[in-house]
Image (cartoon, rainbow, N blue to C red):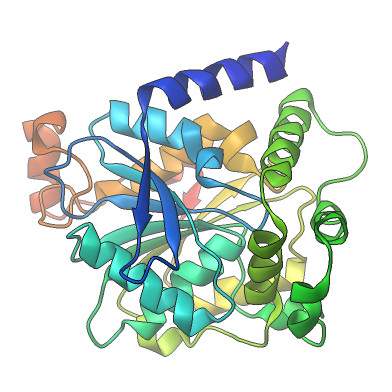
Length: 311
């Protein structure tokens, strides 16, 4: 059974990668994260989950990428009701982890938060590159800005119903069905304040100012089949980042990192490969062949087209 296999690898992940709990200075915010791969790497890739996700939803990326020599951090945010407050808290977390600059992979809300963090810190950059998966740049696409301030009043069951309403409906292939079941399980683990705060961040009136992050390398990963994002929202992302690499998946729904993990991991590798041999490499130098490093240093272009990427 596919779902049993998914949970088998998930439990393998849980017993091999320890969960870290980091509490901020005034004990009010608790970050949960998994940090795998060589700790000598000072510019790792950090994964930010969607509204319904926890740090565990990227377990297949953590296992695969750390196995290839990358330092990978997957985290779960504390309760934040304001975007600037989140950005300040995330900056403090990076300071605590002694990370000057990082690569960010954000799914849906995670991608929006990644863009906002890059924007807020643009005068003293902390983000070296972005991978945005099924993400958006303007919260108005959800037509929920008028309810953003009332989520904190709603009971947990109502908030979960709102989130589940965005999950793919109708027939899907077995792997996508397993991914949805896994995400429902993760959603059940979130409490009322966690869900309400994430929906507030997802829907309060805000948009990305692209001119502030024009020097950040971006890859956009999206799917051609049904997802919570409209075609217009995807087109807006392309306009916002005209120089971004585009990685398209024919299918994958809302959670391609779970049901199309091999393809997503490949796109992540291709994105990070451009930084091999530099101080912003997310991979241990010993894991990169001398030949590949030489290619990077002579600035030869990676043949991304073979992997379905567009530049």
